Image (cartoon, rainbow, N blue to C red; front, side, top):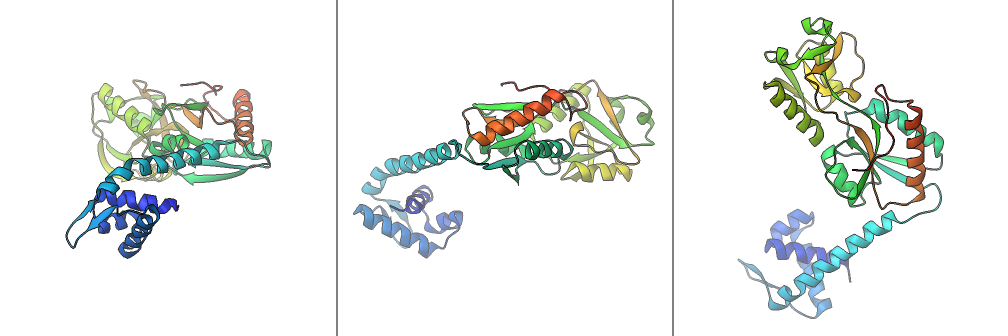
Amino acid sequence: MDLRRLRYFLAVAEDLHFGHAAERLGITQPALSQQVSKLEMELGATLIERTSRTVSLTEAGRDVLGPLRRCVAAYEEARVVARRAPSSGGGVLRIGFPRGESSTVLTPFLRRIAHGAPGIRMELTDVPCERQAVAVREGELDVGFMHLPILEPNLTPLVIRRDRLVVVMPGNHPCAKDRFVDIRSLEEEPFIGVRLRCPAYTDALGTLARHGGFRPRIEIETNGIEATVSMVADRLGVAIVPGAGVQRHPGVAIRDISPAPHRLDLAFVLHQDQRSPVLRTMRRVVQEASREKALARDGVREERAV
């Protein structure tokens, strides 16, 4: 039995509309109708009644709906288990990476992993923080690289850096002469917002604004920290960003915030049941680098569980 036909039938059963289901599946309506008909032939029963105006499930269609859903779910579970099974050889390490954020921290660790495990091929995929934990849980990624905390169960972080929010401002800004900037002093400043699609960053920024008693006046929005820093250098405004993602830039001052915001620890995130040799090697390399404190300005912690 072709698993695709099960998915096609389930899509039609959910939408009760061949056109909508075909659009969602990314196939033509005639092809979808043909595949559902072939499934009906395989099962020896009519599953869907079609008229020029309506689509409805037959009694047989309603009866098989539950078993077919369980069949597809069982396949997905088997696929995830198979991806997590130990493998021999060097192997592939699929790492999720939020583009435009924290590359200054991630890149040195990738070098260490490549040096400590030369047989491993690393595949980096642009995945927002908000999606990474789910992707690791479902086996789409072997490792996520993201800010904590994470809400997904059964995931373990390898914390590599204690990050924090910082203010990025033009170097000639009056507040740049101070080490700590009172966030309330920036209330009237034009802000550059950063769309990082990172729930931890969004929550920390919201908490900071509430505790500081102000609402940033956002006049420009960007998709990455690098672009934001360039705009700050051009004196278009100030910004609040995770410190680990900021590279030094001429004409830009990076200052700590008062009151101190919540930390945003950076971590590699793995599934706690993953036991593949590839991930064991990667875990060892990361832990060795963390113990050496070779890569973090503020100190690095060893692995901990959430």
